[in-house]
Length: 401
Ligand SMILES: [Zn+2]
Image 1 (cartoon, rainbow, N blue to C red):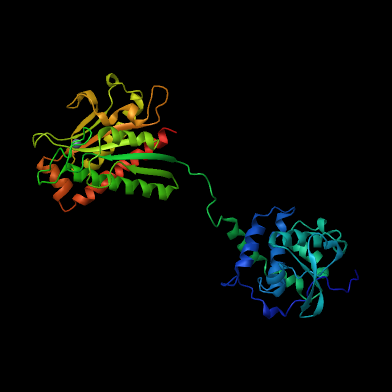
Image 2: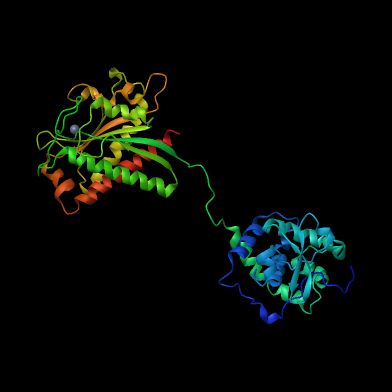
């Protein structure tokens, strides 16, 4: 190739190109920057100066060669480009000529470096200490336009800014969730008839609100809180309820849902009632003597729930009593069917499901009823309990990994 022959498209006048990064930079050019920022090249210190060249040659990606042929460098066709580009006849501002057409952005980037690695630029690899050294060497051949090198150098800072910004991931990488699990929430009681050992209601609050209504409402709040935690952290959490309406479900059927759903956690939710004076939070687990195959796991889960409920209540009622985690032998009937391991899907060989039953408070106590149901901030208190329980369940899922 003769030295007087232009290797690339002659550039428009300097005032035609803005030095500042245009606010309406095209998606195509942004994609080019993003790809170049992530592409490994032999001399990464030359990325900014070569991108500056492409900015100048393509007018920030707006030239027809760029938009139609992925040719951001104004590269004319040369036979050495065979395999990197195809030849197209293009009517440029300095007359018709053959130019390189690239199949895409990646092909252009590779093609540009192939273009430089031809005989007119022999020795370029000894001029790679800096972008300026490189462009002062290749520039006069690349484009004999007067002042070409200075015009490229004037764009290097902007090119570097684009590359630096592109180095930040634009979208979060798609990863498998850091936590996954299935949770069954069991709002106690429901409906109007006793079904499969489940009474329709047990406790009634001092103001007349039924336990079955409160258990369902708090279960739905826990579900919301769990789904919010999952959404915020990218967790894959499935939340299943044994009932979502005022209907009763048999005891065994409730526990069996954990088995069917292959749940990691089963939480039965109740409120207590006794003599309008006894109060406090207590959580039950299957006793060893009742055949618990994963007592330690249940116990750890139960203490998390117990602590969560207690903590939330004590924020509003500091004297709230901690009645502790108890074995179900200490419950009224000596056994709680909803904590039956076999129904939950656990055996002595495999016990994927941790289970407990929380009695949140004694709602027949007027002080407790006001706190949970009738005070101005009652709704807020119930929300706080639900959020604390949800956080405790997530903590238990994390601990079990
Ligand atoms: Zn109950």
